[in-house]
Amino acid sequence: MFSNSRISHIFYHSTIFLAAVVFSNIIVNDSSAASRSDLKIHQKLQSSSTNHNNQPNLELKKNIVASNVSVLPATINLVKEFEGFRSYAYTDTSGLPVVGYGQTRINGQTVRLGQYITQTQADIALRQELQHIQNLVKSHVQVDLNPHQLGALTSLVYNSGMRILTNSTLIRKLNAGDYAGAAKEFPRWNKANQGGQLVVFPGLTRRRLAEKQLFLTPYQQIASN
Image 1 (spheres, one colour):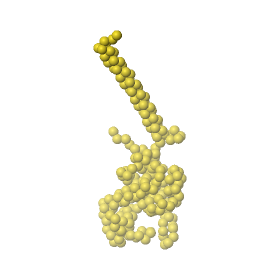
Image 2 (cartoon, rainbow, N blue to C red; image 1 turned 135 degrees about the horizontal axis):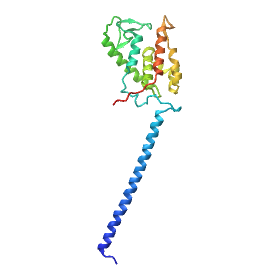
Image 3 (cartoon, one colour; image 1 turned 90 degrees about the vertical axis):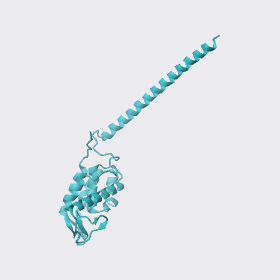
Image 4 (tube, rainbow, N blue to C red; image 1 turned 60 degrees about the vertical axis):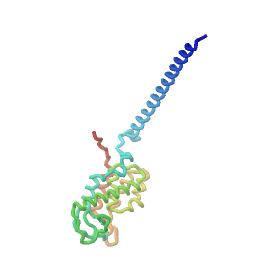
């Protein structure tokens, strides 16, 4: 017969042993789960960094193209280059009064003939307008865009209007994931209204080619140290 103290001693050590076994299993299971998780993350990163041809994937992921993404300097410069700057309002080929960089509205107000604007004021208004258009583009496009693709579309919409996003072969191809097909649609938007007729403008032809080139230019984010 064991004394009460002996029984207590055996029970105490048995409890310690069982606890150690359970704790050890928990550690092993947790480590195994962590390893599986790390493996999945590694595989996901590898998959996202290459395309189906095992080539480096230069497409920017959608979480980077978010509402807080500022308009790229490349987009602003492209618009400025082809719009040109005028400090006094004038009538463009569509018959609308425009000022600055072909802007029809400044601070929410419709431009009037004879209106004057400084280049600094036009720069600020242009950036705001392009940011607004960029957000509209993102709300209509159902596939991932990198900043160059987004910038090219923003310039196109700024110049040609919202119908690009609502009723065009370009947007249909893009939303179907046909990026190459969408790029080929840019040159088709090289006409403007003149005397009630759509006429090809050499300046628009050059602009569409510049936008197409920007659209097709791979974008790589530079990591900060």
